[in-house]
Image 1 (cartoon, rainbow, N blue to C red):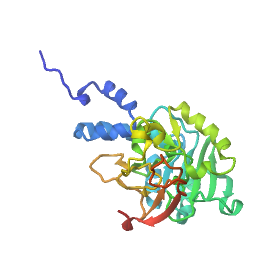
Image 2: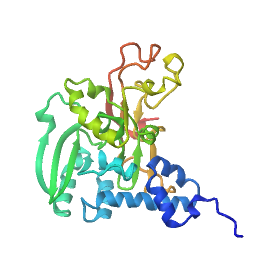
Image 3: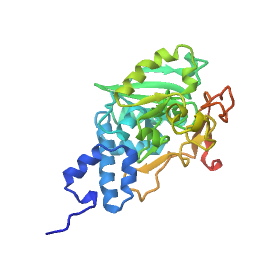
Image 4: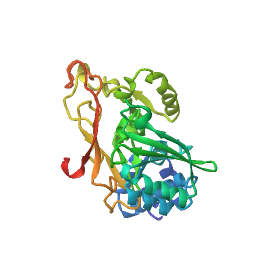
Length: 313
């Protein structure tokens, strides 16, 4: 009798592909480091997810991905989350985030190459003087039933708006060839933290309720801080005083050691945070996790800014 293979990627192709389709990007990245065969299977799965995401929105997905890298643009929101959690989310539009300096070039590409036309235009910097979401303006492009929302950053770093998002669940993003997940353990557990700066805005809770209900349908649970789901682990609900990616006072940036970064093509290629020498730095802020929390008794105001990559670490 022939020996039975114990290598998961030596099962029939259709079985392997079915298993991979039900994995999050966090699990896929862990699997791809088994060996070269595993990396090839995972790469095929990730590339297929990216093609499926782009298919309703662009005619030439390869050229579009090159364009993203050329101008330092990224895809975020529900589109990026759909790639990370395949099968559970179907985006109805594509959210493309741009450095401020790339607005003219990317709009020209989408209009001249992909035949989109401008639908609506919102100049956030002029219409909402108190808005602090890192967004300069939003341009909605339409082509038939397809919609691309082009979101222009306040700075020459496309990711500046992302830490202002309403929850950690939607902070993932895609470059032309890589994925960045700033809170991989939360994503794997379908757990999300609400943004304390957003929920502090008057009327925000009512506005966020439909979004929370929508994401709960995708299996997400929502909390204000880490202690809310760790009370049985943390003795007497006290801060463990260890560095945590979710702590209100932990300074984070896209590409730090807490992030999950991977290339779509292969584990052998170093993933790119974005094609730029800039990244976005933030700390969450918010209410303390317990009566001995390092933030003090009143919590901490959130902070987000753009910084040179070489000045971090």
